[in-house]
Length: 408
Image 1 (cartoon, rainbow, N blue to C red):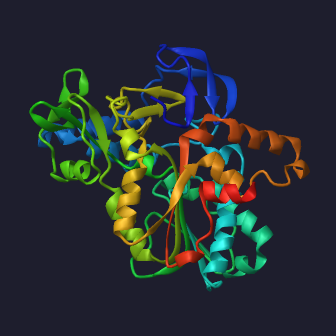
Image 2 (image 1 turned 180 degrees about the vertical axis):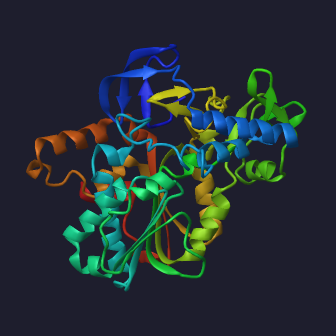
């Protein structure tokens, strides 16, 4: 299974070794240690999880994933070292080239015009990580739309304490900068653009399996060998409801991931966004493809040092946990809230359509090569960009393949 971030061709070897890795289009040999020692922080988190399970009984995998990723003191994103970069665990599009940020800025500038140039125009990035994408977005707006820059309010939402700390030197646009660990309170009804890059894939998921006796759910229990997975009765009827609402029929023995956080998250964003757009960049599939017969084991993997692991319970807090996104569900929930679905396209189509390749002959060679790497890499195909909007009517900017066709 491929996380969509990096692909290695020797993932199962034990111990330190060199592997040929395609990482965001950069083909290179990197040293990978698939037997990295468990950190003291991870050992403490695992001990806490074991103690809680022994007291209360098995917990859902979704609860385990929430603690492993977002525990404020010990979790991977909550308190761990920054995972982005060649010397960390993975690379995403903003680390390769600023084209994604520049393209989001172009979309924001167009939305500003459609909305009548409100004061303020708000940009809200959710899951902003180390701020690298935000820097590219803000730099492009300041350069290309100085009038908007003076009316621009930028809000960054990031749960990770370490990641928030490195955002403190983000440039402040005319209407202010706010860095927080949660979405704004409902009722603000901002005008602008909400965007997220690789956010939904890190939402905790429930793991379900279809059996001849019905649907069961993966729980995490304690055994002599450590944390183990066991299947029990579903913790909530919402799991079966999700499958039914999305017309998903799992084959006998098939495992799938169900993310129940998309519904409340989109509902909260809808309460915050008065008029404008929501842009989601992530790796995922249509519902039919995600739960099809070729994915009998689901898509969930752990990732560390550019290697992927099926052992998702090992070393909690040391490894990223990620599952592919159900874009069909994203559309269904969004439209149910009254948002309009503008479409979904590949990252490559989005970048080219937003002008990422224009005037490349004027750019330094290193920048041109970096953009080439991004556009021809696996990430350009595996990542989708989805756009929903409200209050724009027929004035919404062209998006995706339709926009690309206008350039030909």
